[in-house]
Length: 229
Image 1 (cartoon, rainbow, N blue to C red):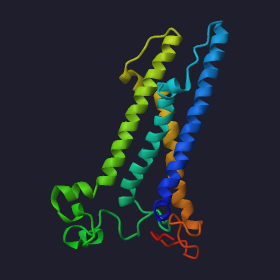
Image 2 (cartoon, rainbow, N blue to C red):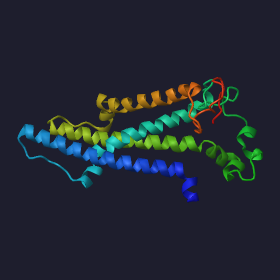
Image 3 (cartoon, rainbow, N blue to C red):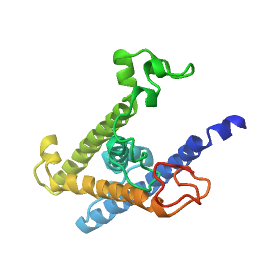
Image 4 (cartoon, one colour):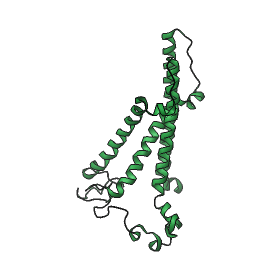
């Protein structure tokens, strides 16, 4: 029980994520087969419906998942970088106004300033410390690039399948990445992520949620910056 409590945030969101992913797969499978049936009826052909197992390994499902994942990881990658130097007066999402930049080794507990229980790579110095002090950005950025590429490949496959179905020419991967179809799917996710995170930074100046570390203490002045409740 203590383990569940100590890891409740990650386990809770993992459960919600898996439930949502399964629900998306079920609804997406139904929609895919409905579209195939409707299209076949219009052409007076036999509908090419597929099984649930076939659908979840299809480019159609892969594109739907990846285009959302890549935008989420892009959001946090940019947020990690942006909050190093960019500040927002009064927001708990911002550092304090006098701490813009990479900060000193003393502030960051690096090298000789590390504590006995600090991670090893924060103590050793050199390349290992340099990698570790940027490890969050490196991993999140790598996941974003990987999911963005996966979105482009699955989207390319789906796009060419539609082209074949409509007796049009197929395109190369580079050709697809340059299409409005790809960028419409990409940018509709990017703009919503940027709006959400920008709204959070601003709304948290004036609004509160008691007990949440994403909010300032309920009684904190609006001008208080970089303080979480």
